[in-house]
Amino acid sequence: MRSLSMFSRLLIVSLGVILLCVAVLSGLSYVNLRDSSIRARMNSLKAQARDIGYLAGRKSEDALSRFEASESAVQDLINWKAQRISEEYGAYVRVVERTGKDYYISPSWSNGSAKIKAPSAEQQAEYMSLALQGQDIAQPTDSDEGPQFTVMVPWTQHNQLSGQRTVMGYVLIQTSAQTVHAVYRDMIWQTAMAAIALFLLSAAVVFFVAQQMTRPLTAMADAAGKMAQGDFEVRTPEEGGKEIRALSQSFNQMAAQLSTLEQSRRDFVANVSHELRSPITSIKGFAQGMLDGTIPPEMHGQYLQVVVDETQRLAKLINNLLNLSRMENEETSLAFSHFELNEMIRRVLISRMTQIDDKNLEIEVDFQDDTCFVHADADQIQQVIINLLDNAVKYTPSHGMVSLSTRTEKDRVIMRIKDNGMGIPASDAPYIFDRFYKVDKAHTVGKGTGLGLAICKRIMERHGQQIRLVSGEGGAEFEITLEKGNDPGGSHGNTGAGKD
Image 1: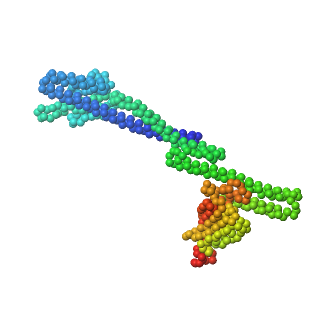
Image 2: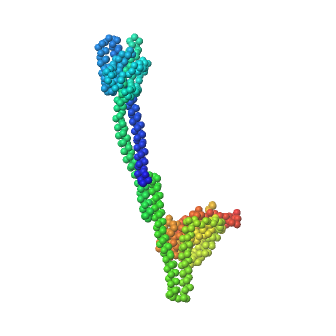
Image 3: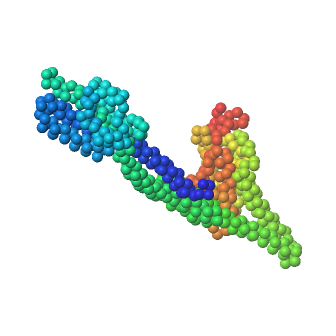
């Protein structure tokens, strides 16, 4: 079954279970019907035997009263009744009185041509003994001619002196098992036809249900094949049972994320290609100009500085890619320590004063406490602050403002960096932390390659902390959380007083 589809396997297993259940139920139904039919047949024979016994008792009473005409009429009625039983049930009837005399005996018994032979003397004595005790018999028996069914009921006569009824003999009816079995043999075909109809109906229902269950899975398999070929726009219908719908929703979410990642990858290739092409073109052009004399010797120093700047930009791009790759693969472990966050922010601001002064930016610092100690990897957190501050400076227009703040909440420290630059559109907000994603689609020289925020996101995840975009309107505001630390010198840095 390894090569069969899920639909085929489900259908085969379901039909197998249904077939087994139908077979078991049909067998049980047949056995119950057979037993019920046999019981009904035996009860009917017993009722017929009682009727004949009643007639035999009436005949004796009439004989005692010496009404010979009535006796003859009753005998004729007994003969008619017994003949009818013989024809209808294929049975043989015998009416015996307690003296052993036969009131009536089927012709086949009397002439010895019956398939069911007359009972032996011992059997007759046993029947008479049971009859005199008021007992009757309705049971299957065995004989030399094969299995048969025997019914024996006593018959009585009214005693005019005592006013009671006295057992005078018994009525014996015997028939071969074949005549009783023939009654319920037709039920075999009826039961079989009902079972076949039930199986076909169940099979149709199972086929429909299995098709409905496997259709979404088949659609997902087809969609997965198309995704393997690079089509990330394919989606699956969200239908079926609760679990199947949840699986379809997860599949579609995965497809959407892969589509976004693929688009980001393409954007990254375009961005990196542009970022690499620009400095390489500049370096090549200036170097070629100095070699062929296009650039005079007295200007070599100026253009060599441009070459150095472009080389540094290339080095920064490559370093960012390597750092992100290392963090994704967790090749380096974090070196946790307790350090003062406010002082780190001041040092980062001082290192970026040239860029800040070039754009005449106003810097606003709001520290809730004079000292704010955190527990983290100092180098990694410094990289986060540098990336966020560089973005704020980069996207803030001249004479704009950049603000930085820190505050303590219970066991964590919250730092925010905000600018009043171009902001981040709501449509781009969900993707800004994706690798290689850039809000600026114009590939502006010097605007980066979309790796800075991805690096920040990965650093904060490795710390078990968060970074999020608080607001993208009227400028971008980012927030990071850090674990509150202790003053390595012994005091806690949660207040300006520096209490222990």
